[in-house]
Image (cartoon, rainbow, N blue to C red):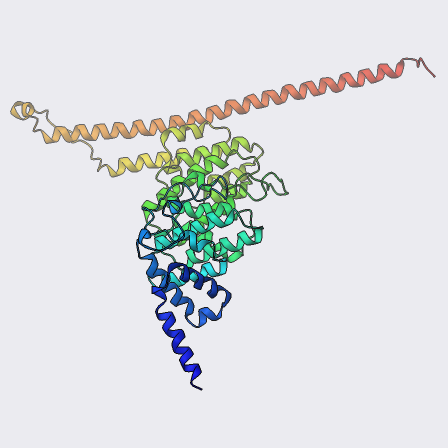
Length: 463
């Protein structure tokens, strides 16, 4: 009857003294906890082990008994997308090895399930989020290359994604690191919930992404399917990033950074002949108007798309053109659009009309236009010499503004007429070519009939 309490007291005393155990004994305790899961977690033993680990981690590496040398623990953590073996190796370095000397000892003993539990236990007891994030990336770097199969790789990635999404601060993991995980996870079949978490985390940091980050190869690249599938890049994934980003209701500065990034992405995917119009419309109209101060880049991307997809109807083109705010086009782009045969005539008219309205608005808000008085006497004497004739100055301003308004209106109308004349000339050329082709077809038919009659009139040379 007295044995049980004494054993419990001994076990409790041993757990209390665990922070003073040798480092390797604590690592062995981690191994034993994995064998006793989930009992070790429910009884609080895993938490005690995590506390002992933290006690040792706080000690400088040289003063801590460990089987890992400081030199072997100096490594890089962020992502290189060339291969899974060199995945996390290009941007962020450890500040020495004093805080990361323990990485190699724990990497070799943790399964994906134990990694997730231990990381949460360490964070719950005050572990530094940045150090834990580095450990997770180092774990992937070391273990993915030696994984036996795709299922083991998927389990490791899912464990890391869950900890990053649920337990780590957002600032502890870079956008580049998340894209590195994405590139490794793309060919694997991760659970849908983990994929959604990863996409959401990347979307929240989309203003820190680069064009190279977004150029993720489509899963079915190279396999053309019905409906215009088989595009080169995964546009649907980028649309999911944008949805996650917009759910955050970002401030204008972040929104404009993403707008510029999307314009670069549009220019990159526009030449893809397999990109369906519906997908391109979604991408071109995904962001709110505040994301772009100028729509010139969007216009150029749409122009390239129209050139590559020459069989689009005017209705399909007008749907794509809905993404353009013509009032935010530069005058040069407006003139180019007016003479661009690839764009529907309605789009050209809307662009020129919008520019005309913008010019009139600028003049209207520049000040009231008052006509000069009918009999204003010329300034003479001292006022003229000193330049203090306010009435004369006002008349000059009014006359200049009136002339400016007429000049701008005339220029806009001239651009519109030039565009229409150019289009009429193009249509006349097309009609002329069609008439020539029709005449040739009629002539060829007549020649064929005559040849047939001649052939029937000749005698057969062979029986």
